[in-house]
Amino acid sequence: MKNKIGDLRNHLFAALEKLNDDENPMDLDRAKAIASVAQVVINSAKVEVDFIKATNKSNGTGFIPVEDKKVIDLPVFTNSNIGGRNES
Image (cartoon, rainbow, N blue to C red; front, side):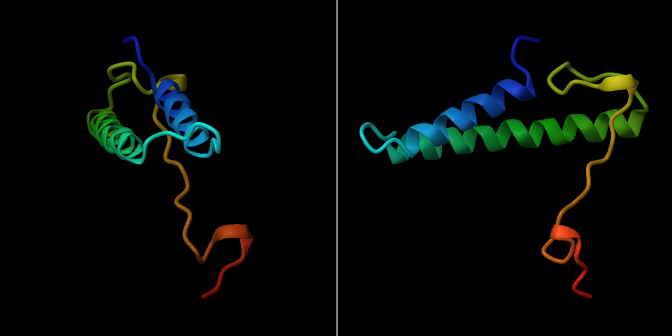
């Protein structure tokens, strides 16, 4: 596969930099289109991760790198657990 999740991140950060460029900012409609397409790609990546987990496959399409032949769960951050404090 040609494009990977890292490529998507790079494109999104480049778009953010262009939006913040005071001399030559990116058109807002174009930025919204980029964000919309990126969300679709992210959603498809989530489906790929779910598929890998549900089928115990050791790989997917290659879009998301799978290290040590398994997909790990990442922590979910909420307002109550950011910064190591628990506000319960």
